[in-house]
Image (tube, rainbow, N blue to C red; front, side, top):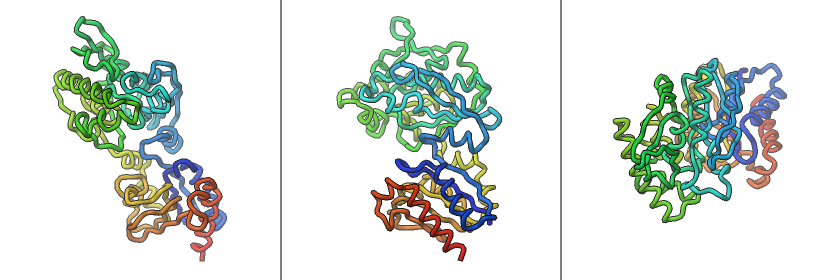
Length: 367
């Protein structure tokens, strides 16, 4: 029997790699001769780069870049496809946890993300997969672009690196020679929001309060974003302000679409394609996936839904910590590890509960 194990993490309790190991152990106890393929998954969020490097036999390189306030931080970049593709988690350079109690989107910068991109291309990467989410910034990617060779100029002709609080200071944009190297680079953005750049659903209004912005700061950020976005449009000859995902990561989505011709793609779909997931499914007799909380959202673009959608006609099992799903696709079984012990115990003892649940499942399956 061939078993494909492809779970997302149980956030706060078990990462996807450990879930794979526990399922493998239980399966081997019941079926010693079974073949197991482990594909620990992530949808573009935290841990995506390192997971994909392992699964695709790539490599991870560490690089020192500027954090949200300019101080050095260590970041990891995954290189796969013989080094031709780099997977960059932007939050490693400017994530909200890095800002800590000082979080303030008027002062934080995305400069470190541009440094990560520059490093990856210097290593020969021809495709950049950039995950967006969890940012502490609202600088429209101006910091990122500055690190890549875009120069921002004020009314006095001074070059400077904008942050969210001084976007209105920008009067013009220039390029230096370094930026030309990105013309042949393919950029893919993985993000889980569809927000436009501006307005009541834009990055300032919706996300900046979560990053420490006061109501007055939100208004200032919006005004600065409006002015700089207009300049972006004039310089690039494009207008991506209303594009879904333009407001992701403090406007980095907009900057990448405008200057780098980046395409926004589903994190789950992209990860599964890179894993050559359909091929693994075709060889499997049983597919086991999972996530911490199963609900209606699970089948609307999240990892579990993406897996199940590709496994039609195959026997599928979803393992979860909490089950709030009111509907399940046909021929899909759910194993909820908290059913007998309660959610609090299962959260604190997830490995034990998962092990027992999988032992019971494979014991019944064997019969």
